[in-house]
Length: 320
Image (cartoon, rainbow, N blue to C red; front, side, top):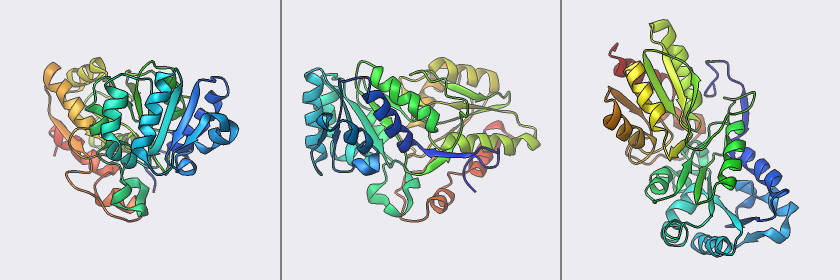
């Protein structure tokens, strides 16, 4: 059973595939877009762009730090470099270069971390980016986006490329549920309410948006009406949507495919405590690394499920 199946959501494309499609499409109309790869273009899905525009695609090999530095130089010359690698290779290996060659000078570099989260499965913990959002959010001036499905990713890719400044876009390996079958009303920094509710709010991003919708469905027979918010942009965060959810529903659960510290939960909690303190619960990977295994089995083992989110809603609501 895939996330979203309880609510009848169909299974769509992986967000990395949607990113690759959008990049190729946008590259055809904007000659300033270039790609800088660390020899994993087939996996990150920058390869279609590179095949279509070989003169604007640069493969620096397995050298992520150099990759980011090259991108900084290209941005300083007026190009719009899209730097793509596995989330852990990009944000962990090249953090110092991102800090000094992208964030500090506020260059127009577009960082894309693929294969994020534990849902990459059998590749194992050495390749699971689960601290990437915390690292990205720690850098001043860096916009951080975690889209939930293919339609959201397509619009997020477009928005990041049109944004004047550094961005980090997190995408995943596996297919995900379709949240927006008719297209996504995406705007950087503006959350999307995908389901209305009055008794509690579930705030999620990435593949956990589908889990949040399923959890809301599970809570219905219990008499708990759940609002579900897709908070795709963690930075800058939509303070108004979070504060309104806290005031109007009285309880918040945050669900993310990330470590418990420094990600979406930390960002939402800061807003809640500053604007409208309410009971909160958090569903995430915890303070631990995962292991190699079947993607769904890993999500089950580490509690990234609709049931875990529904249980957290009952606790925050005070009905359990």
